Image 1 (cartoon, helix red, strand yellow):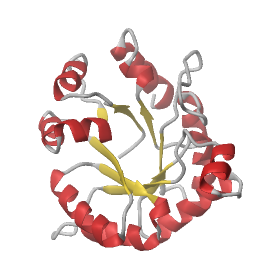
Image 2 (cartoon, helix red, strand yellow):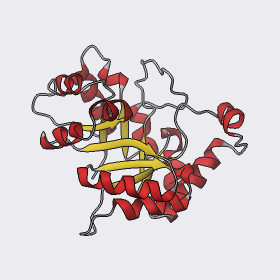
Image 3 (tube, helix red, strand yellow):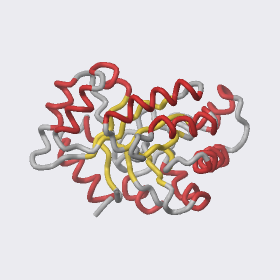
Length: 232
């Protein structure tokens, strides 16, 4: 898979999701299904969107003891998503167990990526709430290296860190970056953000874009603007 824009379908229901996606006549955007939609509709929403031809990033951010995550990933592997994820903070043992669970009997599996630090986290909150005193960039790199050594395919990171992750872990190690906003847009609750064009320049493989597209007056035009700035 090459560079792409992943649309974060953070909706409360199947109906809202399908109504939104039906705006994209003739196009099948790569979509992210996160906790809000998955918890509302369950695995059937994944099956529905796959049947309609969408690639899916299932963003559930698993984080638990290794055996629990392994068993959960074994269930998710049956949904035929393209990418799924977990928290790197769960340790290398958890990440290795996740790969074991995610890998099907025929040896295939979705791409598995690890969340380093959420884009709503900044240096101050990381030190105050998590008691992590190292510079946030160093923390992200350490988590990324741990994920790579555990056998994962890449990480979720701020676009601000995509370049240093590539430098530390290699160009084939995927960087999936939320926290992308248009230059003339609102950053909302995101702290570490970039524009689509900046994310492309710094080395992001995929950008995850939610409200700048889903809340736009013309979502299709906003999506096409993202694609033009990031992919074309």
